Image (cartoon, rainbow, N blue to C red; front, side, top):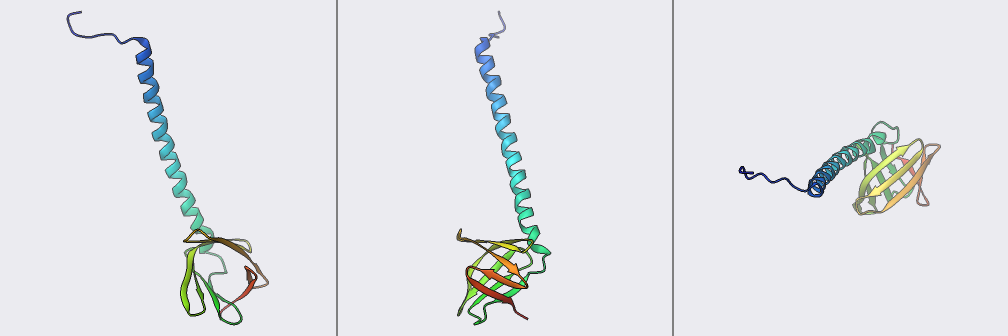
Length: 126
């Protein structure tokens, strides 16, 4: 009475509790999403690191050259244009998926030591 404390109506108290719960859920969701994103980013590079296909792959005429780097990145040269395309790649079994830094995607297959990609045949440079 004389202390200046006023009891809030239950509806306002419930609303404040709901807001606090919602804010906590949002923070938890963001933290969980960031943790998942970090683990996805880490696992995305891992399959490429220890596979037998890392190295330089070239067409018979030498015009197209794919350098599959052991860190899961690739650098593609075309003709006189070095580093024409760059991005990341993943190898699963004999299948390779490419994600160009510009957003372009492609894939290919390793069959009997030959890379079949986009209608081209690339062989390992020795």
